[in-house]
Image 1 (cartoon, rainbow, N blue to C red):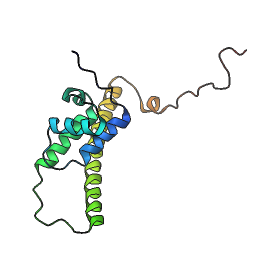
Image 2: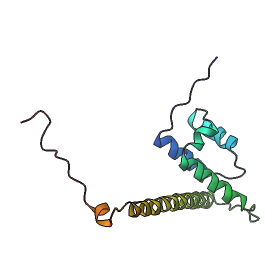
Image 3: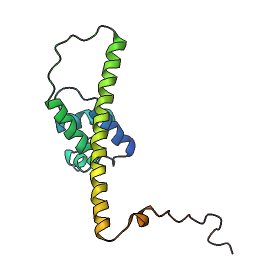
Length: 144
């Protein structure tokens, strides 16, 4: 009997996976992430599916690296529930900011590659900065 295929990842599902990674605490493995996503979304994806999405692969590697360097906290947890929630939110937002900074660095690196390649092909800055032609929205195809 053949297994049913999980649906393709939408932007919404992708964002939920990234949010899960941003808020991850403790040991992180692909299997643990896949289990958490299955509980969250209701479908089982494979590690190879996640590895095809650079956002997930980069966020996973970044989170794994950040968890590798952290030591367990020796201070006690605050008793106030609101303070604990605020600290957890701050940790989540810090992890998200780190992930977005890493993505931005990769995009900047890609931009520099494109700029150098464009310069080698003789494309000038004036050509790159030329405004795009405006679409003619006043006429329909059939009207004369």
